[in-house]
Image (cartoon, rainbow, N blue to C red; front, side, top):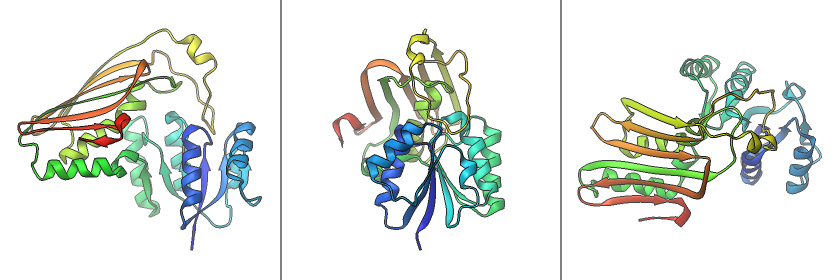
Length: 270
């Protein structure tokens, strides 16, 4: 029996979810929710969606939809908690894009709610399923790098500038998840500094990817430097920026016997 899914958000990443769900033999898209009619029309045309797929502007239009068992949330980060909580309370399994929530208390509450409802709550840490990341974890676990000394990562590009979260919340999640997985540890100390640049003109025409209203937050850092310290003493340094024309997706771990580099722009690990 296929899993009936409603996708909330038909923006840049929502389109990726729709494509993958359509290609998966065990899933069936029953509805796509987005407040922008042009986006709904675009995904209908792009994927030639069956006429039975509901295209709606509001999630209330699919409440109680027969066969619906899961909800995939690809909306702005500030809406994740509200939408995930509503879906879990309605009895649906939930896949939510990173981050799960913007407050620790809200993230814990969602986990507890999922347990109470006996439903799956899954955060889409995409990179953890990348074959290069799996290979990197094997290399580290086999001690091929020797004693691990430090790590660093760069995740930069020119836009999109977010309305509701800063570069830290938007970008750092990926690199932190990779470092945690490779090291099999959680940081015991985190420090971060940010820089805000004038961006009124940039934000004027930036699209919204929401199925519920959001309000831009003031003083969102465009440039962030992060330091993670792990129990072993290993430190990782992360450079994050929205306003960098030099697009980078690179993560490095330096050891006493070798260096591991994951450079997504080169499409290989070396």
